[in-house]
Amino acid sequence: MNEFINMLPSYAGIAILMFSTFLIGYLSAWYFQKAKSRKLIDRLKKEVNALQQTTKKIDDIETIFTEIKPKIVEVVKQTQEEITEPVAPPSESIPEKNRTSYITYTKQKKETEELELNFDSFGYADSDDSDDLTQIYGIGPYIEQRLNGIGIYTYDQISRFKQEDIDTVTELIDFFPGRIERDNWVGQAEGLKVH
Image (cartoon, rainbow, N blue to C red; front, side, top):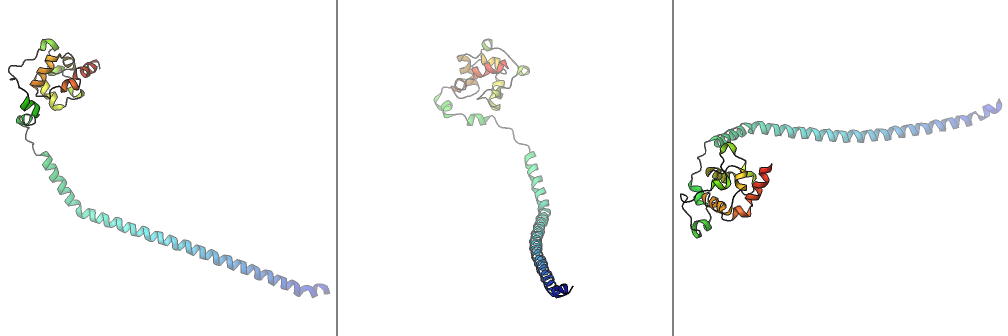
């Protein structure tokens, strides 16, 4: 037992050394964890502040919008009134003004009273039988209206055109000479009347 008592101070020294090592490790870990947490907290605070500033900007935008909203509504109403104002119908002189110089100056125009379509050649039709002629490349709404005005309503009629019919139609609707052939109205109409 004497031996134990003699060794007691050595054991106490070892115990104190181990306890002090534990305390140093614990306090170091606590300090570093606290520093790491502080960095995280600081970063999160910055993010929160940035979000708050963005929210303030959004509030500013909403404020600006509520201030200019009555002006926007007023402009929209004025625009709608301008759109709904009646538009004068186009005068018949517009096609005359837009005729090409080729037709106007170099081509001898026949009087429309002298020109007659040979409906026996390509057939008769009326507005009840009409097809959508704008499906033919080269025929827009205006040309379709002109064709309907001279009695041409269907793909079948156009598919039966002969050269003299094409020449007469070109004259009657004041269309570009040779355009009907170039756009191949007859072939297109033949393809469309099957559908």
